[in-house]
Image (tube, rainbow, N blue to C red):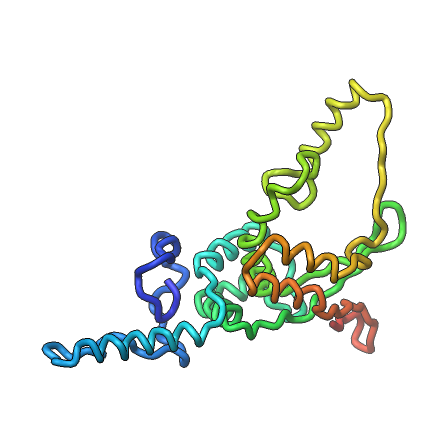
Length: 250
């Protein structure tokens, strides 16, 4: 359970076994006590309810985006399973875990308030089998969790629109599935068509991509953060040889 949240509403998903990620936290600075506004036996009960409603509405307005906190629990679990290297801040998953509940709460708080700005992506050049190199972007741990939150919200909307023969970056499908289908079809066809779009992610028009995003979601926070990730800066991970030997400068 997150800081300052009661056990009601749509967030029961995060209150069972996932409660261990959040317990024992104090209220944040933008949270105020909204209970106890009506004194027992007060004659002006309707006025007290009105004040309570106004304060609840004020709390709602303080967070322009309603993002289910359970998404952050689920996103964290998936990122933890996938492991991966540290980003530009050099924070590993183990480092993130040391203050996990506060780190997840801060991430939810920033994303739901619209103030989350993706940090620069750590860019690493890796060799290609065909020669040359390609650039691999490594986000920070927190940013990977944020991206997974948006993925969990957005993916169910677009998944039904993909062709059955599409295997890339899809849930429940992998390259091994594609190979299995290819193995079966090679007994029926004696030809194969192969093509690739060079530098797709580097050259895809952002305006067309965002039009497709807008078509498949009504969540303004999903659209907002996808736009910010598309323009997030990238910092090269350079190996430099200095007076004290080989050192890494990011």
